[in-house]
Image (tube, rainbow, N blue to C red):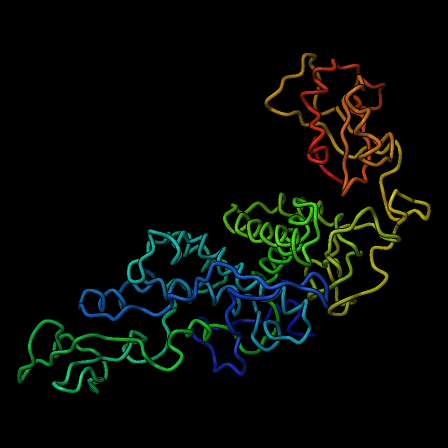
Length: 465
């Protein structure tokens, strides 16, 4: 299990890696697994399709390739690919092409997601953006150096592909009646060659330099490690970010669209929402506390306990991430970090703390908050103002009933106090707003109406549970 645990001794060289033994394929196309057997096909924005440099026919660009290589989109993508895979200790053989469907899906998601995150962090436009320029793509140098520091590599490291002219390509010139041919002169030398002058005894006219070696359009793959010696520290950190995002995007998309993500029809809405959520996560600033809270929140929507390990020191996930109705017997979905005691994949018997009599309207059993439990603190809608002053730090949501949404919807507007409902597909907890442990406050009915939206009851209030 060495490739699936942190290794403080692991150190991977920047730049192109040894020849790969397998083909990683296109990371912009893949399969999202919701459990070890079921999944759906996905297509992300393809950031790899315009990888090749345009033909170079100016001394200015040749000089820039040597003096300012990070201005080239190709090198920015190479850098991001190395960081997301090799720099993390994620390899082609161990992770990206592993036979376990769910493991492979998560690690391939990690590679694409972190490549995009890193490009976002250095503020590099994508080929889909109007500001994108293959030969002079803007980027944030300070952001680039910050990530180099994170992965403990020099900002002067080589991110160019291999090949003639330090990866720039083969020199070509035109032969009369025969077309363009490789000049066969080796490296481009501006003192002896010229893009603008005619051939003389001292100068050879050349027309352009072109990347045309076999596989040149997919050379970003050469920056992916073939065999791992274990995760690096930034690898553990970024893998946990990727796992949280993967689980959140699957479960959150289903909760947002109120439908399972597998199948046809309405499932397509959930799959579309998954893509939208991933894009939102890529563009979001780094906020670790919010990301962890968001991850804990969506675990309540899964059909199984948190029992699937992706490696030691990494967040575990639910082995079945289809949307559930109600709660499943015998577990309490809290965040779990895998240890060396957990095997890769499914682990039975984890997270098994639940009251034996926790029934709900679905006929299933599972963990829930007990009557009287504090489940959050009140945060008012900023668009509305309470007519009575309160110390908001003391206002608590306490569970007073376990009922279905249908049972509550008909009578909630007549209640004199402020209530909220947390629910999944109609199964919820009715919570009453109390000040500390004191009696409920009789707030005006118009405040109740201002803070309760019967169309989105599960989005009212504060921290879900």
